[in-house]
Image 1 (spheres, helix red, strand yellow):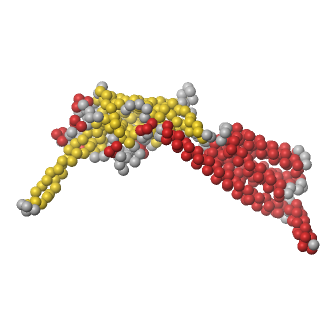
Image 2 (cartoon, one colour):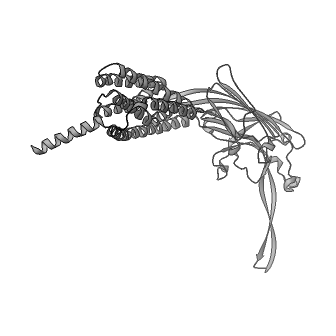
Image 3 (cartoon, rainbow, N blue to C red):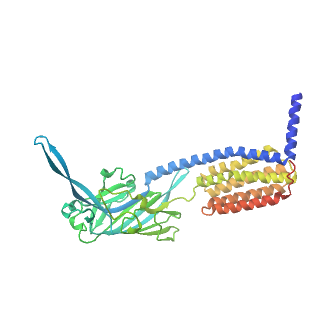
Length: 458
């Protein structure tokens, strides 16, 4: 009986201390905020898990439709003979003699002029709740080759095997090709086949297509010869071209509304088309990049010089949900602060359990947001989740505060806070600036409202 009486007295003392002491209320609020960070962290992990699942599904869709496109070519490939002498000892004659061995190597010559025009028609592919962007790219290329120069390696004309010269195209995404690969050189067509023998460490990302042997009349030994070809690709994520021409002009046009141009070279010009898409142009000279117009022995991997366009969703629902969840600490903290100021200024008692219920309702906003956004747009999900939580907390506040004055203020404050966070989420370039200004204004309001609080109450 005495122990029960002691516990009752202790509970009454804590309740009285919590009601009368500002320090006690602040300590309890701080502990509750830290406690609510646990489910908030679990929600962020859930968002990451769902995003990883989305990435897995998107990669599977892209793999079946067609992967990213990186391409450069055509390249003139000419074999030539080199000779190597080695000394050998004949045991029978006891004499040393020289043996001359012929080794065939290859020289690669890039076009003098290269013009590439691409028209990419995009569409979205969806599986369950996950969506990705894919495209069909119609690529037209033209240009010309000038006479190959073997003088750099002091190779005599008699050692050049002109009759076995070919054209080479380096590219990714062979499975996405939807047209036969043919290049018209000097007015004659040449078909291509996959060169599996070149799949080695020098080609970690690109496959090689090689033509049949060129006619001697089509090899530009005395004057420039023009070429052109057309390809149709099913692709995803991005399309890029390596500027191997002495002068390279690249044009990419598409109906995609959110392009991101990538590569080491900026666009020469860019405009928005009538259908809301884009048209981007690059002009790159051989003096703009650090590789020559010809290579001997082996073709290097030049993917780091590629230019092109990413076909991306600027912010999908998981990225936006994750950014929203990162502001969870701010939402919970500011909401508790509003209740704390109301409790302190109006002398209305709010129990720690009631703070906890309000905090859990704020955390539930994010689970609603994730689940609804998987079946609708992020904007609709944000509106539904936000309105549901604001109405719930407003009605619950009415039961605590006994009138409509403070609950309506709380509902308005939460509406403004969620609207402010939504605006920040949608911004990319100005998110930090707007967020900093908003927080500064909130701090000013809190300082103004709390100026008359007697902080000496313990």
